[in-house]
Image (tube, rainbow, N blue to C red):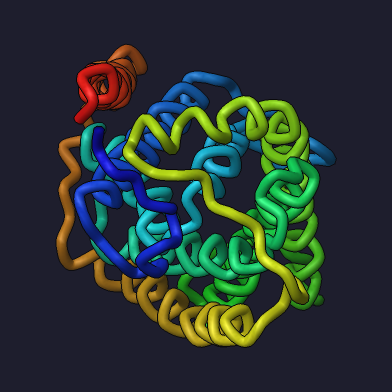
Length: 287
């Protein structure tokens, strides 16, 4: 019988074969649901375009089962691999913002969990992570507007209104992606996954802890989140002005149409179901 380890037993930065499987699972799941939502139309609220996806309850429910740095990193990597590279629309510098901001936001938020058996706490932490991500994107977009590398909607004689317009867009995304398609479904999905996914990957469920939600580790992670904002802003600004330095832009969707989106969808689905089937056989065989 194979021995199992808690998702946090060796530290959040440990990396072994179990962490690799978690990384692949989260990356593929996030890529899969991101590309599925790409097929859905956008809608507008008060003249502001709002996209339905990604369905953040997938990340909230699965990533917070393991609570490791690598699970957090897998979220933006999944978007890059399946949502950019495989459809031929990749810019290295353009990917840096999401890579830094999303990873740091989730890494901080998960440190606040004290009772991993409480779906309400999990959903709240997931919503916080999404809110931090959108807040960071809000600051970065406004910053690009002020230095002249991006045009945003603002009253010509009062450029400060860009804070309101972009802030409203961020708020709507928090409500739609963070609550409607994030926290609310997580309340129902997370408790159904806990205790089932971890053993499949050779792990025990993460246990709760005593004490306050905000600890010394939380403070360090929050300061790291603040510190990466200028780095993300710099990378995004360079991406707008330098063309991305390293790019891969055959633009398959523009060439072959929306049907090409099924390529990354199928690829992600094959990886997810292949990994689950492989681990299922291993578990049944006692490996």
